[in-house]
Image (cartoon, rainbow over all chains, first blue to last red; front, side, top):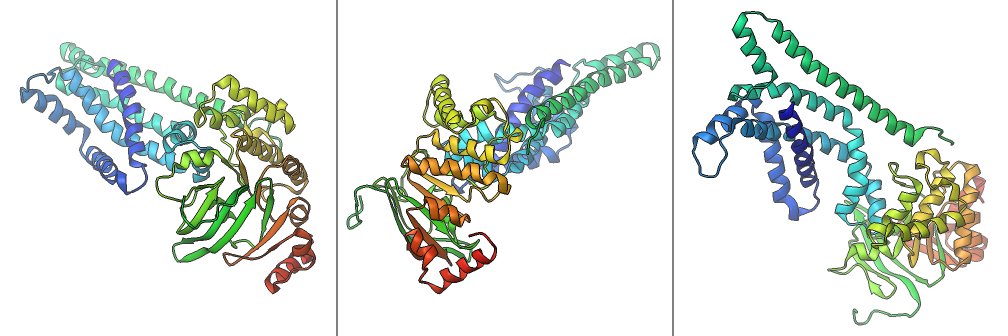
Length: 207
Length: 256
C-alpha cells in the first residue's frame, strides 16, 4: 500500500508533465516533444518486470557512489517510469479531447499558453480521463506485487512466506481479498467523483 | 512606427491589405478597413466569405500571411509583439459562447482579469458583479454555464470580454447559435454597448440588427470587402450586383 501511494503521487505529476511537454506547439519545442515520445515508446514497450530487474538489480550493482541501493527505492522508480508512460498518454487523450475553442477563448482573454493549459484545458481534461486513470491505478496497485522480486516484503511476498511455512494456500486468497478490498472502494470513489461533477455542471438545465 | 503608414488619430483599428490562407484556400485576399473610436461596423456576407476569419486575425488567434493590423496606433502584426498583451485590449465573443464549463459564471468572468491583468480576487469580483448586474445576470453568478439558457450564456460571454475593459470588441455571429426567441436579449445587450460608445466590429447574419446598430456596413465576398457604406445605402440601394444578389436571398429567406 505504501509503494502504491508513493508511486501514484509521482506518476500523477510526472505523467502530466510528459503529456504537457508533448503538447507544446511550434518547431522550437521539437526536441522536447521528441524526447517525450521516445520516453513513452520505450517504457510502454519494455515489460514492467524487466524494468524492475534492470533498475532494481542492475543499477545498485554498478556501485556508483551516491546512488541509492535500497530495492524499495528502485522498485518505486521502476513503477513510476513504466506507469507514467501509460498515464501520460491518458492525459494526452484528455487534453486533445478539450475543444480548441476553449484554449482560444482563454488566449483571447490575454492568458498565456501555460495559463490557458493550467486553468482551462487541464482541469477539463483531467475530469474526462478519471475512469481510464483509475484503470491504470488498479493496474499499478496489482503490479506493486512485482516489486517483491527485489526482496521487498509487500502483501504478496508476505503471503508466499506464509504459504511456504505451512503449505496452506489460504494466505494467497487473503492477499487477493486485500487487493480487491483496496481497488473496489477506489472504483466507487471515482464513480462518486464523476457523478458529483455531472450534477454540479448539468442539473436543472434550463434550455 | 513604420514610416509612410498613416497614423490617423482616433483610429481604434486599422487593417491594411490583410491576406490569409488555409492551405490552398485563400480566405482573405486583401482586406482594408479602418474603425474610428466609438464606431460600430457590421460585416455581412455569405458563410465562408471570411467574416469570422477576419475577426480571428484581428485578435491574433490566426496568424496572418501578409498585411498589417494596427490597434490604437500600435501595430500588432509585427515581429516581437507580445500577443498576450495585445489580446487584453481586444475582446472577442464567439458564436458558440466558449464559456469554461468547469467554472461558475463569476469565475468565468474573473479569470482574465485575475490571471492576465493580475487583479486581486475581490477587485476582479467587484468588477464582475457590476457587469453581471448591468446585463441582468446578478442572480446567476454562482451558476455553471450548462445551467443557463443560450441567451444567458452569450451575455455571460459578453460580460467576460468586457471585464478585461477592452478598447475594441469583436463579435463573431454571436446570435447564430441561439434559439430565435433568445436572440433579442443578446442584441439588446449589444445595442446598449453601442449606445455607450464601445468600438465594435460585428460579423452578423442579423440584417435588421446591422441596419439599426451599425454606423457602417461592409459586405464581404470572396475574401474582399466588395462594398461598404452607410446601412441605409447598403440595405436600401446596394451598388454591387453581388451585394444585391446576397440581400435578395436574405429577403427571400424572410430574414430582412
